[in-house]
Length: 136
Length: 136
DNA sequence: GTTTACATTGACGTCAACGTAAACATATGG
DNA sequence: CCATATGTTTACGTTGACGTCAATGTAAAC
Image 1 (tube, rainbow over the protein chains, first blue to last red):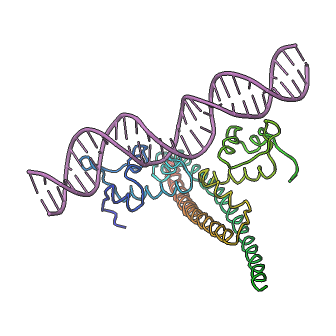
Image 2: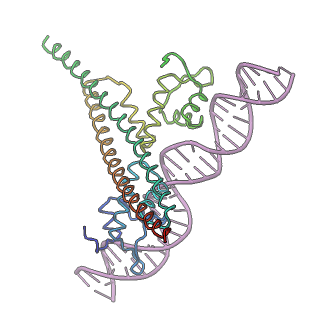
């Protein structure tokens, strides 16, 4: 919430449970651009927000290059109307990609839930058997 | 649908747009187990179904090792009730993982849609400006 | 002032997930 | 009979995403 404060590399790495190496690596790949106080990096709230997006992208299975492109969508470029239209197209493409992923997920969840139900049934069946056996 | 027929490595690779190399690689990693007619691999409908699961897992960003574990959940082991309970736990864990992923996706979609709406607004604003300028 | 903790930049290592190339078998049509 | 297509194994190459290590700097704490 505090938009003015700044974070050290350790603070950020602890908060999001990533290594400092990873943060420097993301910077190398142009995903974050922290300031420098002399040598040491100072991460702003904006950098922190970008890191959140990076990690979300990773959880969704995107490569760092793809995440870079997604981050580009979040950084206002506002050059020409043509550019903005192009960006709008990329937004929509990304949304489509995400929706396809969500369908995959829903399918997987349904499969798994079906499996759950079936397994539960099998277990209760076996339990009934065991109870009968126990009673004999 | 035809449960009795069998597929060559080329047929499968073409149908799912993966290389034959990848299919052999998946076999190496124990994800598929096609039969052999002499040297050549013969893929059954079951192998084909497993391949579908593999590719879906990949689209969702899972590693081959994780996919292997997921596939294990699909192959009935029915040893003891204890085993089945353990499997049931894994199912539920997997479902939780997928649900978390879906939340990430929903968040990303909402962000993108917000961005879309904002961008559309900016574009229409600029267009209005341009029209005024054109008329002068 | 010195230890201790945390920071930096290379450079090289590693693991996964294949690609690529070589060298060979099998079969099918012209 | 030979070419072409498709199959095989073995082995090395490649890319992405960091980990690890060395050599060094800096800053707070005692």
